[in-house]
Amino acid sequence: MSEIKMLVLSNGEKLAGIFEQSSTNPAQLIKCINPVIFKDIMSPQGPGVAPVPVPTSDNSIEINIDQITIMPFKPKDEFLNIYFKLTSNLTIPQFKTTDKNLKTGIIL
Image 1 (cartoon, rainbow, N blue to C red):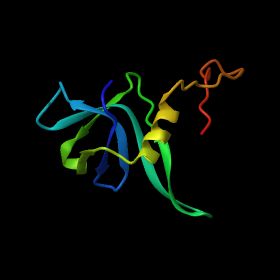
Image 2: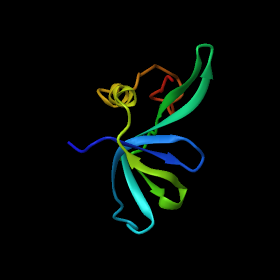
Image 3: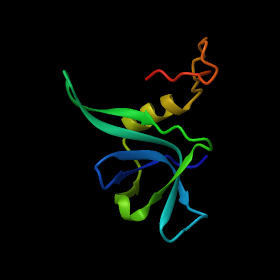
């Protein structure tokens, strides 16, 4: 299994996933498989992060390397534990509706 890494984007958000060289444009893009964004938040307990899975049809995204502030690195175990909980056995709840265009829902 490939190693989970994290990088920091130019907007300050942290992105975790499995990083590979892009087959589309290897000089300008980096591919992230099973991407999860860690957004900085302020809670009543103090500063923290909110993990946000990136739902894509093929479980991958490509990032322009010009948008990367810190290149992929091994994250702390706390981030890895959250990442694995989000990406292991993820199920999307089903609900009944009269609208034929809505068949699934994601509860965040």
